[in-house]
Length: 74
Image (cartoon, rainbow, N blue to C red):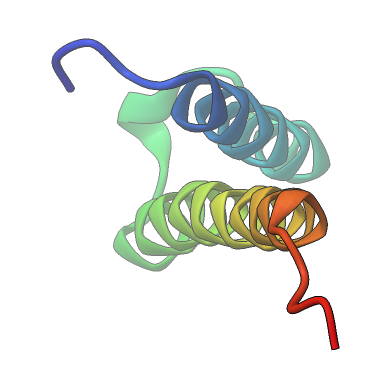
């Protein structure tokens, strides 16, 4: 990713933490020994953490922008 936005950076961090928690729960630290199912679950966990966080941050941004919009004066 070239020049990630602050939201993208936060989402990457969240996805990384989710992936780390999954690996910790497995009790494995060597990615080379993961089974195919474990590897796919790790990737799904990271991507889901990234996407969920990015959606949450986008909703917050939208609420902030909507709150800044001028209202019709009638």
